[in-house]
Length: 336
Image (cartoon, rainbow, N blue to C red; front, side):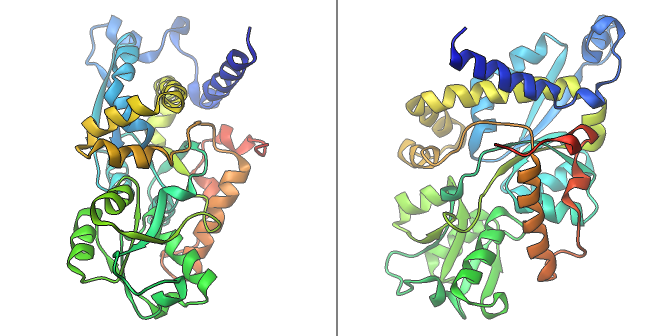
């Protein structure tokens, strides 16, 4: 066995253990979905929320998850969302079971009482989000944002980026004018000059750079981690651990493939998103592949995000992030 093969087996073994504590006893070792199929019952389904970026978009484009789950009598339904906050609203109201978002949306959702759980994360990707200004803008430093109108999606990953960027520049959050808009509306406002800057993530960031000549005032490097998290409804995770284990295993396989096939990644993302290949290639070059169980260190990072929003009264109450873990994950050891 090669070292690389051993690493892959080790990682997938770890992912396989992710839901072991919640799995329960399945008759004769047969997954519940397969039992339902054998009895002729209505097909079990996993409803996945995704955005225009990242591994889930690749997974949808390749179609491997559908093939794998079909063997278990499980269907897959995909629903696209424009941003993380609305995706987690869908998770909370029961229209999806699983999805991926950045750092801030789970904080806002948990503070609002959403019954969700973290089930995995991709590594930090700080260059995948940035604060941009028009190419002819006179804004040159973060300190120049004082008093300016900044477009962003409220409660998204870039909301935390903006907080940390202002903190670094010594500018109070109260001294800027946040303009809360979803990505499409924010781009329109940015193009017509009704905002001075835009805090945005890939691939919208890459599109602004390639299509509009937007200039990066600051990206996340040195400011934020920008983890991408996989979340599920707690009820779904507790009832369907085997399905989620398979989903995460297929995510891991796509991560392996995507890391080594950047040109094919760009081709699939272009087809899935409708964006030009040069745009998605730039976005994909900033991805961080390698799904893993959520560690104590990552949860500690999330707690710092939560505390920052709580300190500014941007969420209704303080939260304890580790409360949004399955019991098994509370025993995780620190990442190396």
